[in-house]
Length: 315
Image 1 (tube, helix red, strand yellow):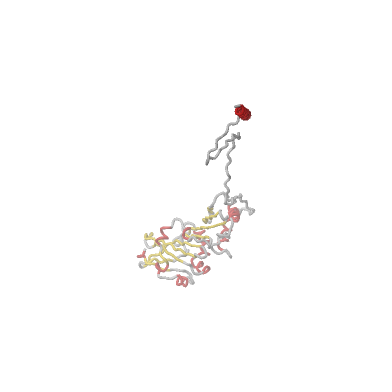
Image 2: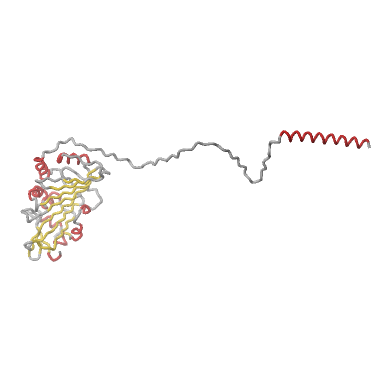
């Protein structure tokens, strides 16, 4: 009995010591709360950080095009006095020198730059062109000469792109005659050779005293970049319209028009024509209208005048 009591006492002391140790450990870790970890679950730690509000910024858009800067043009050329303008222009027309169509008055579509056009206009009229427009149309008119010129400038390339020029012989025979000497049909065929196309359009309405009818003659030089339109009246003789594009009085040629563009342009030159689209659509080729080929017309042009007939019935 004594032996067993001794063992129990020893066991009691051991258990009592263990309880004391565990109690001490529990008191030292009473603020630690264990966080359970579940399998296949991610533990997330949230941290609160105070961040000042951010001002949104825009990402700049980069332009791929080169900005175009238009500078106000000024010319160093003096302005011609009004009494010298007509003489100056008449000399340019009658003596073109090496300025062959589509060159006109020293201006060449596809080559002449905007500054050079500005210099020319300033020399004539004493004013500079507006540098802010993408295309510029400039009319050059003079009370005595009555010449009308339109210049179109492509500001993307900064080059002169098109020239349109007209002169009326019916109302202003003086101005018309100054052009006709150098740009008659005979002289055009002689200087520039065989045209690429010739088309004719005739009216169906007779003019007083009922023996005349108006016509249009379109002479194309597609490769060179120009088109000339002649407008006049023909005599009705034996059921035919007798056409002689010449200048001998107020009853002959009425209008002479030029359409000039860069010869390298891929746009058909007839697209420049404004106001005569219906006439162009109803026109006939030289051969269909007259029975003459362009080569045969070239043979006629070696004479003093180039005249031919077209049947009145086909119009």
